[in-house]
Length: 485
Image (cartoon, rainbow, N blue to C red; front, side):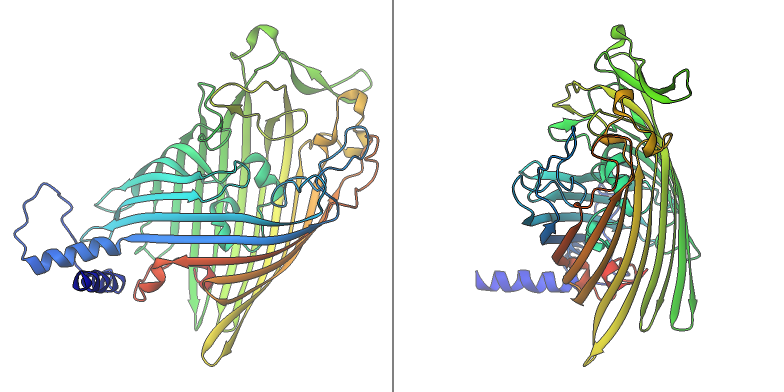
């Protein structure tokens, strides 16, 4: 038994150090192989090498200006809201939180041309702080053409290809949370559907190009007890992304840009659908345009336009990154939230619909410094981030009046965040972050000025492991903590 265990561990060690130009097992599984036993063992080890394991947890402590439930004005608010990691407990202004605890298993296979032709991934949240149970984050397969490696078909639960911020793993974010506009129009990071993808293969180094065309359930990830599958119509997501990197001496400078388009719909599930109209004096008010006979029959457009740009320079003593994203469009939300109404267990939500034209953006600047102690590199990051979300961009806040149907759901919020991250090793990161949040002045009673008690301090420790670290000769590593492209 002991000998067997030793053999197994030796095999795993050999697999971890295997190179990408090693043996390749048969792509045609029906072909009878006449290889020797030693060659078969090499192929088995090569298969093990193509699996990848990633895991990270994000325990954090937060201190808010107010507790979870606070009354302010006739409508009231939920303390600092849910955008800094979820609503705080009713009578607490500080908390410990396991913000994320995720495990990801993936498989990639390359053919004899060194082209990736198969990709498979499964990621789950070990404890979802909203659902209170295990939640699937990704579960998809992807097959890529074996001739040029550019065209692929993907299906399952996968990361929503919109912009840049929402496509980056939260383990590598410069800030604790996504921007407010991203959290609102794209709850969760994933969708359920099918996708046609055109992407330049990893060995193609002239530039990076990717185009996505996706058909998805929309209105949420499409799994769990909250879904958007109660309606027949599906949503379309399209994106095109381009990137380029130049080497200048010991430094690298690169950029990437993308444009995104989202077209979906929300079903009328009550007698009330509100849209802005002008009265005889030219003032905006919400008017009910819902048809009582069209429940579960009539849909209203959900449409977004987005663009992002990122520039990054990496040099021996650190790196500099500037990133920006902008979104605008039509968001069919509810009366108390501009989130898309979600059903439960595929049943339609009992919710009125408010058709709002919105805009939002995010700008981020991050400066990284490398310091060496006895040959060991330690990284320090200083980051500034500003974002806004205006759920009702057609009307200024000072023109909001409660009798005309406006509420705190229509208020524009801006967030200025500043933080410091310390990365002594790839498997650990300490983040200290402070969000300063402001809202626009409005005509709503109790909200005539900025509410000053919704700022949040976050101190997070992140523990991360990636099996690709043990493949030291891999050319296509993508560990962002290493500050590489």
